[in-house]
Image 1 (cartoon, helix red, strand yellow):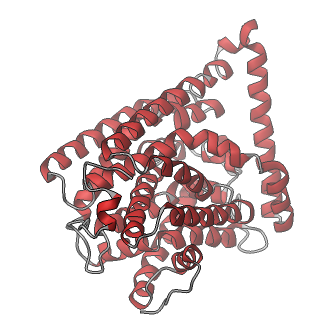
Image 2 (tube, rainbow, N blue to C red; image 1 turned 90 degrees about the vertical axis):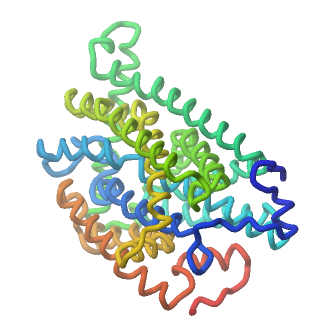
Image 3 (cartoon, helix red, strand yellow; image 1 turned 180 degrees about the vertical axis):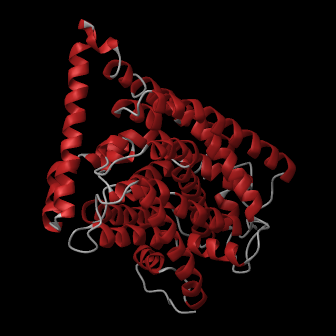
Length: 430
């Protein structure tokens, strides 16, 4: 392991200090917990659509099983500009930072990368259970796979990690824009009627109808309370989605993990960077990325929020400006998190410390709320009502996380993951 920029793994193992500056009293980096708490709540406002409506409704409002009003069309625009991909991006950056922080502690104890591999294998197993039995929008399996690949680059100097991450992200953005961004030109314009593109247009329409039909079938299963049938459908019809999701998000996830590692090593989260420059760059990147996303969202809305238009806007054309916004947002939040105080801040940070439990717990809670054998609300709530459910769920996160961590060392699933990783029981109570 070589790193001539901020101390090598060998130096850590020999006992040289690698302790960050801005840390909480228990040795945790305060800003990481705070950002993670904001991200786990923020990502819910995107995911809630696919919790309570068919998966296709996440991007395509016409797939809602209830009317989608004009006001809610503009909510879609606001979600794309302010939320979509940004909270996931924050999560991914923090995942990379957390991976390197975990490795630093392992190296200091004389342990190696294989402990992290074991940790990621368990994460992948959690993700598979989540995907097939709770909610198919899982991101944990993707993180496990991309995190394992990122270990190939963990010994690089931080500058090399940063450059590889940035170039990989830009390359991914161009790839997605070129491939996905082209689809509405064929599906929604006269180009698809030309002989050279007519077959492609037909294939795109067939794929669209198949996905919408799958959403209707899932609605029948979920709303009807056929949990076993829904699980069987996940295995029969959607096992391949695991590979598709890897291909779809690989060039976003792996680069952001590498950037997160480099950002942690440069001191973005713990006060080692010049605060004035960090604030300036943070605002510049965040405002530029947000401003550049606005015309993409407006283009999709003006075009009628078509199936392939929304897909292109969310996946294709917004990735590059979204990256700018993510980098700016994490810089600003990291700076704020080093000094933020107060009861609400403490509760948000506690939600971040229990982010693994909150992420999976949210899926379980919404499964109980929406599936027909339990709450039975699937397909009955519109976008506005679903946002209200998201607010209520965030309130639950804030209410339980702090009291729990006042009494226990870890969140419930954090404790389980830790025990599985180290293959021994850790004390849970303080």
